[in-house]
Image (tube, rainbow, N blue to C red; front, side):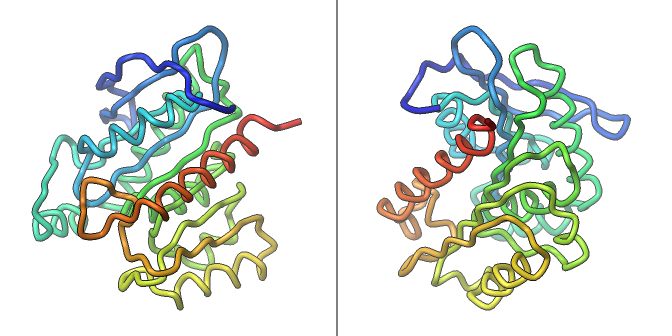
Length: 236
């Protein structure tokens, strides 16, 4: 898919997960026919307006987009509170919500169920990679500066990945990213680790002037949208 198309108005939806319910922000392109879908996983701040805006951008690029809420309505701008929310998030529960999001997208009339991808940022990047290892329903994954999963999990990776990292990230270090690159080769997995020089963690977040890099984020957006277009649309 190329260019910008019209997107409808986003809305909060509910979907089933592990016998319960979760919520998320859903937005669809305007137009007839079926589309590929992308799951956008939020940072440790929660499902805020920045993540909804990222979802809107994917919808304008031709994807039905769902941003699940892993915090059940909690959103913060305070780093200490964000850390507590992330620490209190049960990993099994989070993956249950994300797998529920996959199944929900498959039920939507305008989603081609064999063309579902995932991306995420910071904490969301960690879960984007984990989900691609946990579910064969994911056909392409583009984690942004998320933590690296265990070797046992990575061996189960069933989709191509494009990992976006930052040279000056003091959380997701160069050693971790170099290790991921080596493991992808060792395990025969299809993937690329793209590391941006001179920028730090969360460089894609344009609401945080202290870390945002326009040049790196614009290039990352081009790479990621080209990656999803290749693996979710150019299947022939």
